[in-house]
Image (tube, rainbow, N blue to C red):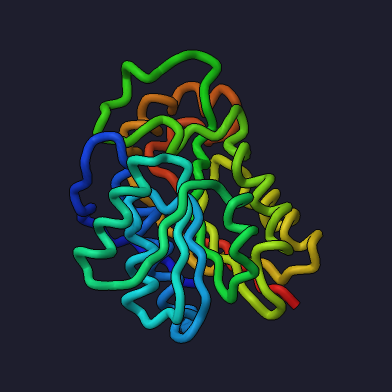
Length: 230
Protein backbone atom coordinates (compact mmCIF):
# COMPACT_ATOMS: atom_id res chain seq x y z
CA UNK A 1 0.00 0.00 0.00
CA UNK A 2 1.26 3.43 -0.93
CA UNK A 3 1.36 6.02 1.84
CA UNK A 4 1.76 9.63 0.73
CA UNK A 5 2.60 12.60 2.89
CA UNK A 6 3.57 15.06 0.17
CA UNK A 7 2.01 18.48 -0.26
CA UNK A 8 -0.13 19.11 -3.33
CA UNK A 9 -0.30 22.47 -5.07
CA UNK A 10 -3.83 22.59 -6.44
CA UNK A 11 -4.32 24.18 -9.87
CA UNK A 12 -6.59 27.20 -9.69
CA UNK A 13 -10.15 26.83 -10.94
CA UNK A 14 -13.04 29.29 -11.05
CA UNK A 15 -15.12 29.71 -7.90
CA UNK A 16 -18.05 27.31 -8.01
CA UNK A 17 -16.02 24.31 -9.17
CA UNK A 18 -14.43 21.81 -6.81
CA UNK A 19 -10.70 22.61 -6.94
CA UNK A 20 -8.24 19.72 -7.33
CA UNK A 21 -6.93 18.91 -3.87
CA UNK A 22 -5.02 16.16 -2.09
CA UNK A 23 -7.79 13.63 -2.74
CA UNK A 24 -7.54 14.29 -6.48
CA UNK A 25 -3.75 13.97 -6.31
CA UNK A 26 -3.94 10.71 -4.34
CA UNK A 27 -6.44 9.22 -6.80
CA UNK A 28 -4.31 10.19 -9.81
CA UNK A 29 -1.21 8.68 -8.21
CA UNK A 30 -3.02 5.40 -7.47
CA UNK A 31 -4.47 5.33 -10.98
CA UNK A 32 -1.06 5.75 -12.58
CA UNK A 33 0.58 3.26 -10.24
CA UNK A 34 -2.05 0.63 -11.08
CA UNK A 35 -0.74 0.38 -14.65
CA UNK A 36 -4.31 -0.11 -15.85
CA UNK A 37 -4.77 3.08 -17.85
CA UNK A 38 -2.93 2.50 -21.16
CA UNK A 39 -5.39 1.21 -23.76
CA UNK A 40 -8.32 1.17 -21.31
CA UNK A 41 -11.84 2.54 -21.51
CA UNK A 42 -11.94 4.82 -18.48
CA UNK A 43 -14.82 6.54 -16.70
CA UNK A 44 -14.20 9.40 -14.27
CA UNK A 45 -17.19 9.92 -11.97
CA UNK A 46 -17.77 13.22 -10.15
CA UNK A 47 -15.08 14.70 -12.37
CA UNK A 48 -15.30 18.27 -11.01
CA UNK A 49 -12.50 20.22 -12.68
CA UNK A 50 -11.72 17.21 -14.89
CA UNK A 51 -8.19 16.84 -13.54
CA UNK A 52 -8.40 13.05 -13.09
CA UNK A 53 -9.99 12.49 -16.50
CA UNK A 54 -7.31 14.61 -18.18
CA UNK A 55 -4.61 12.66 -16.34
CA UNK A 56 -6.11 9.37 -17.55
CA UNK A 57 -6.18 10.58 -21.15
CA UNK A 58 -2.60 11.83 -20.90
CA UNK A 59 -1.54 8.45 -19.47
CA UNK A 60 -2.67 6.62 -22.60
CA UNK A 61 -6.28 5.61 -22.07
CA UNK A 62 -7.99 4.51 -25.26
CA UNK A 63 -11.14 6.40 -24.31
CA UNK A 64 -12.08 8.61 -21.35
CA UNK A 65 -15.61 9.55 -20.38
CA UNK A 66 -16.13 12.01 -17.52
CA UNK A 67 -19.34 12.71 -15.63
CA UNK A 68 -20.55 15.43 -13.27
CA UNK A 69 -23.97 16.70 -12.21
CA UNK A 70 -22.80 20.33 -12.27
CA UNK A 71 -23.10 22.05 -15.67
CA UNK A 72 -20.36 24.52 -14.73
CA UNK A 73 -17.99 21.65 -13.93
CA UNK A 74 -18.85 19.97 -17.23
CA UNK A 75 -17.97 23.10 -19.18
CA UNK A 76 -14.73 23.60 -17.27
CA UNK A 77 -13.67 19.95 -17.70
CA UNK A 78 -14.26 20.18 -21.44
CA UNK A 79 -12.16 23.33 -21.63
CA UNK A 80 -9.39 21.75 -19.55
CA UNK A 81 -9.22 18.75 -21.86
CA UNK A 82 -8.97 21.01 -24.91
CA UNK A 83 -6.30 23.13 -23.24
CA UNK A 84 -4.25 20.04 -22.40
CA UNK A 85 -4.70 18.63 -25.89
CA UNK A 86 -6.32 15.37 -24.83
CA UNK A 87 -9.57 13.67 -25.78
CA UNK A 88 -12.16 13.46 -22.98
CA UNK A 89 -15.89 13.11 -23.51
CA UNK A 90 -17.57 15.02 -20.67
CA UNK A 91 -21.21 14.33 -19.85
CA UNK A 92 -23.60 15.90 -17.39
CA UNK A 93 -24.86 13.26 -14.98
CA UNK A 94 -24.01 10.95 -12.13
CA UNK A 95 -22.98 7.30 -11.94
CA UNK A 96 -26.45 6.41 -13.28
CA UNK A 97 -25.70 8.30 -16.50
CA UNK A 98 -22.32 6.56 -16.71
CA UNK A 99 -24.10 3.18 -16.75
CA UNK A 100 -25.52 4.14 -20.16
CA UNK A 101 -21.97 4.31 -21.57
CA UNK A 102 -20.47 1.33 -19.73
CA UNK A 103 -19.20 -1.04 -18.81
CA UNK A 104 -15.67 0.30 -18.50
CA UNK A 105 -12.26 -1.28 -17.98
CA UNK A 106 -11.44 1.25 -15.27
CA UNK A 107 -13.73 3.49 -13.22
CA UNK A 108 -12.23 6.23 -11.06
CA UNK A 109 -14.27 8.30 -8.65
CA UNK A 110 -13.80 11.18 -6.23
CA UNK A 111 -17.36 11.44 -4.91
CA UNK A 112 -18.73 13.72 -2.20
CA UNK A 113 -17.84 12.01 1.09
CA UNK A 114 -17.85 14.59 3.88
CA UNK A 115 -20.50 13.98 6.57
CA UNK A 116 -22.91 16.88 6.75
CA UNK A 117 -23.78 18.54 10.05
CA UNK A 118 -27.51 18.98 10.81
CA UNK A 119 -27.00 22.76 10.83
CA UNK A 120 -26.13 25.12 7.99
CA UNK A 121 -22.41 25.82 8.31
CA UNK A 122 -21.95 27.30 4.84
CA UNK A 123 -21.06 30.71 6.25
CA UNK A 124 -17.97 29.17 7.89
CA UNK A 125 -16.70 27.65 4.63
CA UNK A 126 -15.12 29.91 1.97
CA UNK A 127 -16.46 29.85 -1.57
CA UNK A 128 -13.02 28.76 -2.80
CA UNK A 129 -13.68 25.31 -1.27
CA UNK A 130 -16.08 24.66 -4.13
CA UNK A 131 -19.84 24.08 -4.22
CA UNK A 132 -21.39 22.29 -1.24
CA UNK A 133 -22.70 19.52 -3.51
CA UNK A 134 -19.08 18.57 -4.23
CA UNK A 135 -18.45 17.48 -0.65
CA UNK A 136 -21.72 17.29 1.33
CA UNK A 137 -22.75 13.63 1.56
CA UNK A 138 -25.40 13.28 4.22
CA UNK A 139 -25.04 12.64 7.94
CA UNK A 140 -22.74 9.64 7.43
CA UNK A 141 -20.89 10.79 4.31
CA UNK A 142 -22.33 7.98 2.22
CA UNK A 143 -25.13 9.55 0.17
CA UNK A 144 -23.15 8.93 -3.00
CA UNK A 145 -20.80 6.15 -1.88
CA UNK A 146 -23.60 3.68 -1.14
CA UNK A 147 -25.39 3.87 -4.52
CA UNK A 148 -22.03 3.99 -6.28
CA UNK A 149 -20.94 0.73 -4.63
CA UNK A 150 -24.27 -0.84 -5.56
CA UNK A 151 -23.86 0.23 -9.20
CA UNK A 152 -20.31 -1.08 -9.63
CA UNK A 153 -21.39 -4.37 -11.30
CA UNK A 154 -23.07 -2.27 -14.01
CA UNK A 155 -20.15 0.13 -14.39
CA UNK A 156 -17.14 -2.18 -14.36
CA UNK A 157 -16.55 -4.72 -17.11
CA UNK A 158 -15.54 -8.32 -16.44
CA UNK A 159 -12.02 -8.20 -15.05
CA UNK A 160 -12.31 -4.42 -14.66
CA UNK A 161 -11.38 -2.19 -11.74
CA UNK A 162 -12.81 0.60 -9.61
CA UNK A 163 -10.61 3.15 -7.83
CA UNK A 164 -12.48 5.38 -5.38
CA UNK A 165 -11.12 7.93 -2.91
CA UNK A 166 -12.79 8.74 0.38
CA UNK A 167 -12.22 9.94 3.94
CA UNK A 168 -11.94 7.90 7.10
CA UNK A 169 -14.99 9.85 8.30
CA UNK A 170 -17.25 8.15 5.75
CA UNK A 171 -16.62 4.57 6.91
CA UNK A 172 -13.91 2.85 4.89
CA UNK A 173 -14.92 -0.57 6.17
CA UNK A 174 -18.47 -0.14 4.90
CA UNK A 175 -17.20 0.64 1.40
CA UNK A 176 -14.94 -2.42 1.41
CA UNK A 177 -17.79 -4.63 2.65
CA UNK A 178 -20.26 -3.28 0.08
CA UNK A 179 -17.87 -3.92 -2.79
CA UNK A 180 -16.97 -7.40 -1.55
CA UNK A 181 -20.68 -8.21 -1.27
CA UNK A 182 -20.80 -7.83 -5.06
CA UNK A 183 -18.03 -10.41 -5.47
CA UNK A 184 -15.24 -7.90 -5.96
CA UNK A 185 -11.79 -8.11 -4.43
CA UNK A 186 -11.46 -4.83 -2.55
CA UNK A 187 -8.61 -3.34 -0.56
CA UNK A 188 -7.05 -0.02 0.42
CA UNK A 189 -4.14 0.61 -1.93
CA UNK A 190 -3.12 4.17 -0.98
CA UNK A 191 -3.53 6.56 1.89
CA UNK A 192 -2.55 10.04 2.93
CA UNK A 193 -2.86 12.06 6.12
CA UNK A 194 -3.61 15.73 5.46
CA UNK A 195 -4.27 18.74 7.69
CA UNK A 196 -7.90 19.77 7.88
CA UNK A 197 -9.08 21.99 5.07
CA UNK A 198 -11.84 24.57 5.46
CA UNK A 199 -14.73 22.09 5.38
CA UNK A 200 -13.26 19.67 7.92
CA UNK A 201 -12.15 22.56 10.14
CA UNK A 202 -15.69 23.93 10.19
CA UNK A 203 -17.10 20.52 11.13
CA UNK A 204 -14.39 19.12 13.42
CA UNK A 205 -16.33 19.56 16.65
CA UNK A 206 -19.51 18.07 15.21
CA UNK A 207 -17.64 15.14 13.64
CA UNK A 208 -16.08 14.38 17.02
CA UNK A 209 -19.44 14.55 18.82
CA UNK A 210 -20.96 12.30 16.15
CA UNK A 211 -18.23 9.70 16.71
CA UNK A 212 -16.91 10.07 13.16
CA UNK A 213 -13.56 11.52 14.19
CA UNK A 214 -11.30 10.87 17.21
CA UNK A 215 -11.19 13.71 19.72
CA UNK A 216 -8.37 16.18 19.21
CA UNK A 217 -7.64 15.18 15.62
CA UNK A 218 -6.70 17.95 13.23
CA UNK A 219 -5.71 15.79 10.27
CA UNK A 220 -7.73 13.52 8.06
CA UNK A 221 -6.90 10.12 6.62
CA UNK A 222 -7.76 9.80 2.95
CA UNK A 223 -7.69 6.42 1.24
CA UNK A 224 -8.00 5.02 -2.26
CA UNK A 225 -9.89 1.74 -2.43
CA UNK A 226 -9.29 -0.58 -5.35
CA UNK A 227 -11.98 -3.10 -6.27
CA UNK A 228 -11.36 -5.70 -8.98
CA UNK A 229 -14.21 -7.50 -10.69
CA UNK A 230 -13.86 -11.27 -11.25
